[in-house]
Image 1 (tube, rainbow, N blue to C red):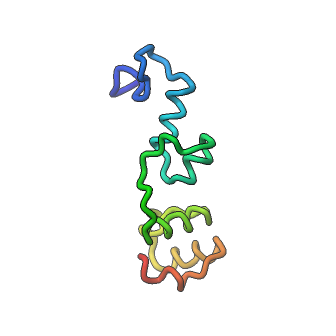
Image 2: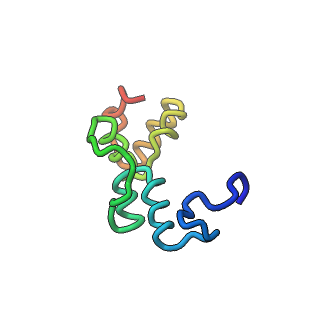
Length: 98
């Protein structure tokens, strides 16, 4: 258990994570609404923003292509272009994003 004396999402304090607690954990730690739905079948407990902003759309688009925006930001320009091309995306469309 490490730092915590009991699992973080053990709401009833029994020392175990039941199905409900596990679902809440997945929903709350999901990186996007799409991921929450994929993990649990709904998004009832998803705690992310419901506002669709341009950055959210960019992140969702890259995630759907199997890319992580933080990893892309850490790459040099040539690596990033290659990763975008390998994912079937046009690197020129993302030139101003990084």
